[in-house]
Length: 74
Image (cartoon, rainbow, N blue to C red; front, side, top):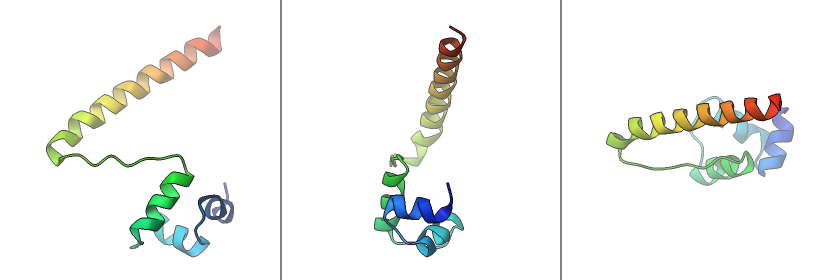
């Protein structure tokens, strides 16, 4: 999706979305608006738990991919 369409879909300016893409500082409200527009969510957890949650998410993604492959083969 072109950046102008993505920005419009998320309700932010092209410049703000470009800043976010390039790792520049942006307002938290704008970052959350972009996440919402892209169907993403943010989960804040203690740093000590992050690795465990990342492993669980990777495992769930692998299982979902396997299930999708099976459904496509049917």
